[in-house]
Every structure is written in C-alpha cells, then in structure tokens.
Image 1: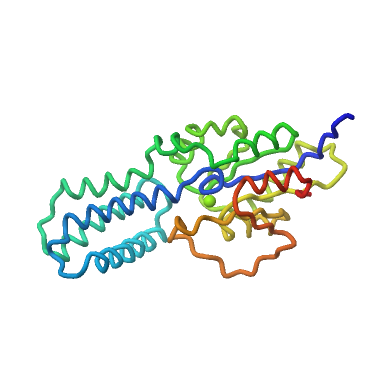
Image 2: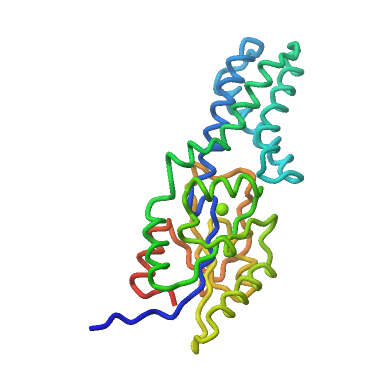
Length: 267
Ligand SMILES: [Mg+2]
C-alpha cells in the first residue's frame, strides 16, 4: 500500500528550553556563583549557612529580574548581574573592592554562553527524531527565537539546526508578536499555494505568554511544553491566563509531540 503524503503543515519551534536546555545553565551558573560568594563573604556573616544561602538566592534572582526588565538575554545581562552582585556584597560586608574577585564573578556568569555546554548536551531528547520525521513528511519547519542575535546564532550552529531550518526560516527576534506569526503563516501559505485544504499551523514552545499567546492571535494552534520546575527560570513569570485547551495542547516534553504526531493527532 502506498503511504499517503500528509498535507504540509507549518511547525514553528521555539529554541530555548524547547529544542535545547538553557535554563539549566543559568541555574548551574547561579549555584556556582553563590557557592563562591559564600566562600568569599561567609566569615563576615553570623547567620547559618542555610539562612545565608536562601537569602542570597532570593536576592540574586531579584537583582537579575530587575535587570531583565531593561536588558535581554544577551552577553550583558546575566554576567553583569553576577558582577553587580559582587559589588553589592562587598559594600554590605565592608570589604575592599577586589577586581580579581569581581572578574571571577563575571566569568562564572559568562559560563551560560559557553558553547561546549550546548554541544555536550545537544538537542533535547527526541527533538532530532521529531524534526527529522516532520521534515521527511514534507512539513514546513520554522524557528522563532527571542534573544541576542550572536548568542542565538551560535546555539543554532553548535546544535546543527540548519539541517532542519533553512536560513530564511530562522527568525531571531526581540519579541514574538502576533504580527510576526501572521507573517510566518503568510510565507508558509505562499510557498504551499497549491494546498486545497486549510492546514493547521503550530507554535511549539515552553512559555505561554511568549510562544503561544501571540501565535493563537494569528490563528495558530499551540503545543505548550511544561518545563522542569527545578529549572524554572525565575525571570519568566508564570502565566495567569486561562489556557484555551481546545487550541492549546500541553505536553510534558518533545517526545510526547512525536507520539501525538505519529498517532495522527496533530490535525
Ligand atoms: Mg523558550
């Protein structure tokens, strides 16, 4: 029996914490930084280890959250938060500013941009399988990611994502907007003008407000990946919005999307 070729659909993928793990690098860098801060400053503090640690985590998160209101995920924000946190602690404990220690704080922050971590982990489990399957079946894949052009381009190269997403279908944007999704849908429709059916367009991502909500506005359906709570990025607020489950499917991870697809459930 001849296998029927599916009607091409559009799948727009998010990058960070969807196709690759990212928040884990921030969590690890923060932990390493706080361990180091503790070594440097603990002799000046009479509180218990746990108390100091808990206070530092909250304080550091809050500092990074504040800075994220004006700075994106580029090279400046996170390492800058680390260096600033050093200066705050040095002032609080009345220790002379030591440029070498500040450099160490900064270097720990830059670890989140270390491509060897991305290369080592590669794509999230089963993402390659899903992308390969969709591509083989003739679906149109686009990548839409928020963030710094240099950082995101480096990730795409290190992970070999150009194999699945052609250059004009990779969008590195400051913000994902409804209009951006409309343009992606229009591009898809133009390229597949002969389709008589009205195929579904999907947006796949781990953050409702950024990846799903603007896509729904443009007529997409959503596949929302629930993230590992342990690595929940504190700068990303949990959405308060009631999710329309008739248009948004919540999945545990990418492998679940493969299962849905293979079961003919992504229509
Ligand atoms: Mg993401």
